[in-house]
Each structure stands twice: as structure tokens, then as C-alpha cells.
Amino acid sequence: MSFTAKLSDIVGPTNVLTGAEAAPFLTDWRNRFTGRAIAVVRPGTTQQVADVVRACADHGVPLVPQGGNTGLCGGATPDDSGQAVVLLTSRLNRVRAVDTVNDTMTVEAGCILQAVQERATAEGRFFPLSLGAEGSCTIGGNLATNAGGTGVLRYGNMRDLTLGLEVVGADGEIWDGLRGLRKDNTGYDLRDLYVGSEGTLGIITAAIIKLFPQPAARCTALLALSSADQAIELLARARSGFAASLTGFELMAGVCLQMVTRTYPAQRLPFEGPSAAAPWYALLEISDAESEAHARERFEVVLGEAIEAGEADDAVVAENIAQSKALWHLRESITLAQAEAGKSIKHDVSLPISQIPHFVQETDALLQQRFPGLVNMTFGHLGDGNLHYNVGTSSAFGDADMLANQDAIYALVHDRVHAFGGSISAEHGVGQLKVGELARYKSTQELKIMSLLKRSLDPQCILNPGKVLPSYWCSPNA
Image (cartoon, rainbow, N blue to C red; front, top):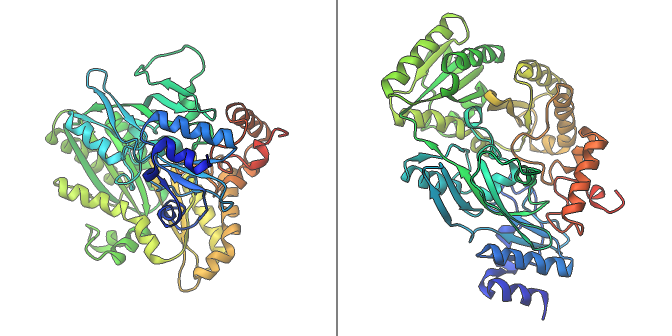
């Protein structure tokens, strides 16, 4: 029996895709990476995943897990050798259980994030992970990259939102760690090992995630700022004034929102005069456990004090849900507007919050000095120190210039991030985009420990090879 026939035997012939049927799954969302594969398989159960992995292990065939294919670092795209199998989790899309007393939901890896949010709402609960791709990204992908999104300040990353996992290892064995426990000190925390490993240590097939009470009210405000330093002062006041009610604090350069309103004329900034062209904006959201009136009163007091203290220049508070959605839509449209504007380089970095204004000021200046005409388009989750420090083109620095200088731009930005004590990957993962960078910024000891883990759990190196760790560190002689 041929290898592909064996795969068909496991998942059924209609769930083994080749040729034109497989093509949509061989290129990443950004069209940056395109690979080839023996086949694309769609298992429908955890046991089928295990059987596919075992078949790949028996034949020495690499395996690339893929969820919604919304990643930004090529972590779910095979290489161009054509020797791999892509394993789609799309058929693993059941909500297995909801426990409203324990505030947990057991979901399979192929569940779409938005569907999980909606199911939580239907159960009178709240699942707080929220990001731009929530209509198509999957829980498995969120776990694989330890996704963050806009609510990290209050609720944490995906690792913090997960209690238990079900994982298929490189040998096809299933680890059932689906325990909805908030305290379990019986040995090493295997959950944390797999979350964020991008499918290189095992394939996550299901998870128990945390649910929360639905807030009684949410309030959103957009503030115009003169500087990133002002944003740091405003964040400190918001943390003090709102405490745990502060669920979102987004920082956006004015050029980003102005690009959104140019690209999508139906969207507009809710300011007049100088505030409509401010150099920076902050988007704040609080979730209140009492009432809309209580939330709005707190908002107006704290934001009023901030403006009086010179920590913000102007503020608009959403009057209703529609206005709140419009403010968030401005923020969520930045990435799409950048794609419309031309080539861009995306840096998903994290820094000590106190260092962000200095990093932005110094790195902006260095980039402009070395690459005149390049456009700095910074935005991100200031509350947890995660910046999407993106750079784009202009009439003086076009697509060809960006392509010719992309390696030098990456190096300059990442060197500055490292110098400020930051990380070159905050929530998008490493994938294949940044795999070559790790040796530059990780210590040899860190890489050695990661290598030992990889080779212990995946001795054949068949699970998503070429991602996260450079190939050398996966070899037996590393």
C-alpha cells in the first residue's frame, strides 16, 4: 500500500487533498511563503490525528499542522521540498463540554475563535481572547503561538487562559491532559511546554479553556496624545484608577489611523481640529461588574483627571455599542490598510513598558537616517509591552526599496529590541520567518535546552521542521 493510500485509509479519500485541491493550504496568509507537500490531510478525530502521525513517523515523513492559516510568520506552511504532509485541524471543530460552575469549556483545536466566543456568550459567560483574525483563526493556532490580542492586560495570553490540553506526540501517542484544574502540582507543567511551541513538540487536538462572568458594562474611549511618553503616564493613571477593570490599552501612531481613514473613507476619527491629526492615539476599554452608569462615571473621572494633568490632549468616550465598535474598528483596520498601501515589514516585538518611548524615538530616528523615506507605522498593546513596530513604503521609498533592504531593516530593529531588553517575537510566533534570528538573540544555553526538548519529544524531527529552532539544533549532533 502506498503512503497516500494509507492516509486515505485513515481519514477517508475525500480528506486527502493533492494537486489543485491542496494548493490553498500551501501558501501563508501574507503570500510570503509557499511550499509543496505530498498531501493535505483532514483528520476528523484525535485518533485519526494519532494514526496519521504514526504513519508519518513510520515513513519518516515531516508533518506540518495548520489551523486557520492566519499566521504571520509562516509557521503553518511547508517548505518547498515537497516531502511533508500538511495536517489540517478544520474538522476537529466540536465544543466537547461547557462547565459553567467550573467556568471552563472543552474545545477541539479546529474550533474558530469567534465561534468559541459566541458559545461562551450563549452560556452566559465570556471568553476574552480577541484579535483581528478571530473570524478565521482557530483555537489550536492560538495555542500554538500563545496568542495575545487586545485583552492580555486583564486576562493574559492564551497560556494563561488554558487549564488542560490533549496532545498527539511525534510517536502517535495521545496525552490526555484535559483537566480543568487551577491547581495541579504533580510534576512538570506539560501544558506550558506545548503552548507556544508552534506544533514542533506535539499536535494540540483539544483544550480546556477558562471562561469568565460577562461584564455588566464596557466603556471605550479614544484619546489624542502628543507623545508616546504621554501614553506611559496615561497608562499608569488608568491602571491606578481602573485597577482590574482596565481590559485594553492600545497605542497607535497617528499615521496609522490617518492611513485607515484614507483607505476606508467610511471610517473617520471622532475629533476636530488638531486632535484629528495627533501624532499618537490611545484606545482604552474598561469592563465594569456593576452597571453602565457606574462604568461611565469612573471613565469620565479618570480621563478628566488625565487631561487636566496633561497626560492626554483630548478624549472621546463612546456613547453606545455602535460607537465602541467603530473605535475598535479603526484599530483593527490598521493591518488591512497597511496591506492596501503596499509592501511593509512587520515587527512583532515586546519591550519593558517603561522603555517603549525611548525605543520608538531612537529606532525611528535610526531608520529614517539609514532608509530615508521609509514610513514608521507603530501600534500595539501598550498595556503588556507588545508593539507591532511596522514600517511601510512611500513615494520616496517604494516596494523595490523595501524588498532590497528588508534584511537590514529587520536586523536594525531587532538589534535595538535586544539592546532594550526586549523580545523579537511577542505574539505572532517564530515560524520560519524568524527562525534564523534566534541564534543571534538567544544564548547558546537557551538553544541547547530547547534542542534537548525537541530531540527528546521528536527524535526524528518530523513535527513542523524548520520552525522555531534552526535545523542544526534539531540534529542528533547538536
